[in-house]
Structure formats: structure tokens, C-alpha cells
Image 1: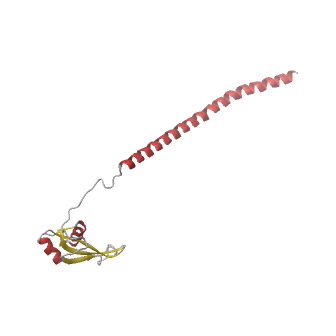
Image 2 (image 1 turned 90 degrees about the vertical axis):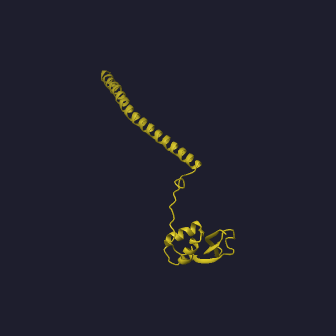
Image 3 (image 1 turned 30 degrees about the vertical axis):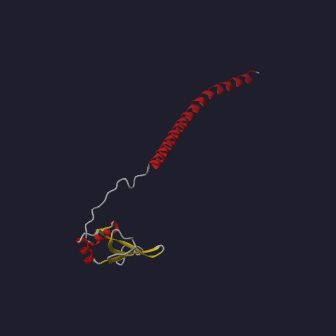
Length: 157
């Protein structure tokens, strides 16, 4: 018979409360179990001592006769120092999906285009600011000459 140390759910709707039980792995989650070896109340704060209660002697006994803990119970046993749990590493967990990557690339391309357009507009503005100054100087010289000619013509009459 395959024996598992796992959680059996109790409590009201949206107010979970779990028993840590030793049960036949083929029995239902909340069904018949061999022995209750602790409790877990996820509604309590993580630093509370009442959150996980575990009968360590019985847990050691069931592990010695071949019981396999579930992932969550394995974490509890590791925290209690009963059973070592190897750390897991999933580097792809925080990586965005393909669609999100495409959206990020499109957004980066739009930002790059906007920066290029802003630089081009800035360069055009600089060029336009320099060109009118030269044109204004060129326009002022003939205007001054025309004014001088008119002045001489007025004196001549």
C-alpha cells in the first residue's frame, strides 16, 4: 500500500483549514486517512507558531516506513528540520510569454522611432534657426541700400 503524507481540507468556504494526514495515496483528498499528524491554518500570519502544528515523532515514524510527503507537507517538514528539501530553480518562471515579448519589442521600436523623429526635428529647428539669421542679414543689406537710395532721391528732388 502506497502511503502519502498530505493535506486534507476542512473549514468553511473561503476559510480553509487543513489537517496533515497520513493516508493511502489512492483514497480521496478529504476521505479516509490512517492518522492525523498535524494541522495547517493558512489564515494565520506566516510568523505565527499556530499556523503549522506537527507531531514530529509520528512524522518521522511514517517517513521511516516509506510514506511520501506532498510538496506542501515537504516544505513543512523541511521548516521543522525533519526532512531536507532540495531547492528548486525555474528560471523560466518569471520570463514573459511570446506575445508579451512581441508587445515589448513593438513598444521599444515605437519609442526608438519617436526619439529619432525628435532628434530630426531638433536638427531641423537648429538648421532653421541658423538659416533665417543668415537670410535676415542678407535681406537687411539690400533693405539698407534701398533706404539709402530713397534718401538720396528725396534729397535730389
